Length: 142
Image (cartoon, rainbow, N blue to C red):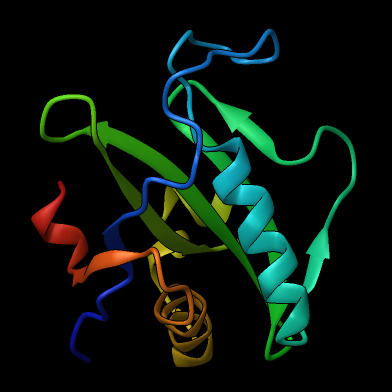
């Protein structure tokens, strides 16, 4: 089975990349507003978004939201990296939710439903201020 492109990069200057917030684990842990926007848009497409606990979830590398689409549970991870000058490039990737043991055996990378990729692409391409949408293989980022 061929590998699916499940990492996407894009540019959009509408999101916060300058003001740290008290809730940030790291001072420049931008992307909470990107994750929140995706949650709303995924719900519009019929996904069930888990808004429990601290939403969106935060790690030292960025943010994440858990959602269910096509009866399969996924996690959308949101990160950013500096680009030209003070501009940022957003990096998103989709993982399967599979529990701790499944994660150890690479389950997060398996059975990514095409519907999840299509939903993310539809959301990105439907926003006029999003540019340079590029899908990548995971191997390109490892």
